[in-house]
Image (cartoon, rainbow over all chains, first blue to last red; front, side, top):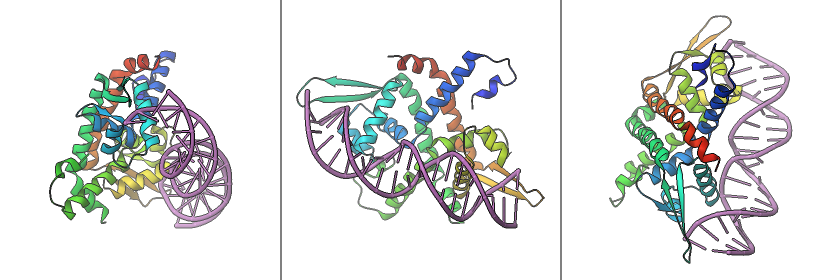
Length: 123
Length: 123
DNA sequence: CTGGATCCCCCGAGATACTG
DNA sequence: CAGTATCTCGGGGGATCCAG
């Protein structure tokens, strides 16, 4: 997806590294749960269990795993309030907000072509 | 992701069906391989083995499976030329083109925030 | 070349239990 | 409430072979 720009150029370790990184990131975020979590956080900051409710169908484990991944990539920020019981809030960072736009687009697309897809399936 | 619009309304079987369908579709397309295939087809029609090359890392099986899925949902069109050896071409349909735009946006996003993400990871 | 079918292994992911 | 750790199982997905 990215490589094309570099085709034919002399080997360049940096570009190759960037490309492999891009693929890695793409693989990270191009998955159902990650995108749904971002969609859920697009409106407002949410706590762990709120997310669990919003992103319906996700398991405890998947939610934590994906949140860690998103955090690692700097797409969501995790804020811990040292109260009792603990309170943890997840917020979209600026890069996360940027991705949010594309996720929204995907959701819009789904809505827009729902009928067409339904029709296509009947064939 | 879609349900929100309907919250609080009296139960409506049609809306529920549409929502479950939307989730199904979203799960179908929100996966790495499907999106990479669409990205590959965004420039031009491709044959099976060309796709296999473009979408590097994908296995024979995954490619066929995803193509069948995309075809079933009417995102790609499959044209068979009854020559020998057989020649099969895959093309993005109009809905497919629509999705392509959002995939492009995702790729752009990846490029744009590459450095930020790299930095975030080092922490 | 395209693409089904089969075998098989590994790990993704759910369930459960336990800490702070 | 939030999160980690362990166990376990099913099926995702690779490798391979066959067919048109």
